[in-house]
Length: 422
Image (cartoon, rainbow, N blue to C red; front, side, top):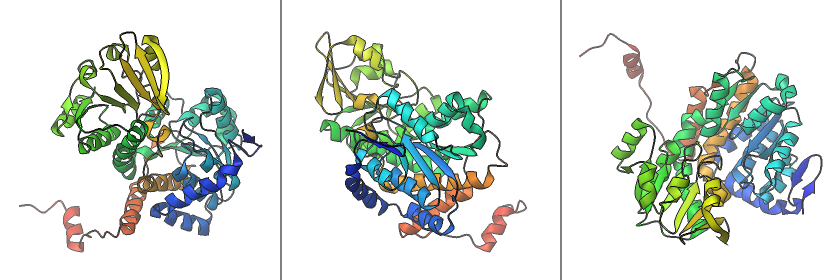
């Protein structure tokens, strides 16, 4: 059953009441975005503005989209991953008047068809997660570019793509790298990914983590968070990294460091978080132990080579939801979670509400920054101004009941002077 009109395409509009319950629940734990929404409702800064989003359509994202609508915007949305959509939440968004086109489990063709539907509003601002929507606009919907003031990007993977577009001279409008804001990557990438990745793995497998060898591929902020939580769960953590500085940091943080060819032989659970392709591939599968768990925490389902798994398998089955078993010719079984897609969203609910509170507050303020400054911004990738970062942090601290120290006038003068000495 699919409910489609010109304004939405969802699995079942009657699921909306359950979606509203989810949205109401998480909104209670998102004080920063609530404060921004109250301000936006008073000022209506997006009155007459069209905003198109490609995001993981779940309950925290829904609260962001509803905040933009409350600010006066016409909002459309499509999924940024076929398996991260929550059909009840999408139904609630449709009921709220957001033009939303997404169904959990949609095909690759449907994924892009729905993205084009979201773009049909002719957006002034794009909010992206993985840079797929920005890429589609540049490749297939160039007629929209003159009306687009700018975009914001949520993820490391997306920022990498956008910086490549800027480097190649093809980026046609400014983009705010929300991912590069301190109150995003220090918390969302580290604490959010760290907790939600393990939530997805544990929910899906119901297996013990303590005593196992956990191989974390990539030691960026997401990898740091995954490794930190694995240690807390009692695992021995092995980091695989190509960057010598990050590898050194991982070792100093107390983790083992080795190449994948060695880690593949001893790992029990493998988690990729690199943004790169084929980090775990045929030569690694060939030496893995029976019963290995494979999971991906990167944006796209390319980090663990599914074609290699399929080529090696003599039988493929699904012993549990979100687990694909690949039985090899020698009897070994390798288990891939969530089809190699983001395990934290495809097999769980994504990052905690308190974390996405900051990330989506940044997205809301980034959209306002684009609206107010697009005429002077060049087609480049920008970071958010520090004052927006600090504003989000201050609201969050107040909500947590935390006060911080303030500099005295004497201390300010001291820091601004070059004349003091020993």
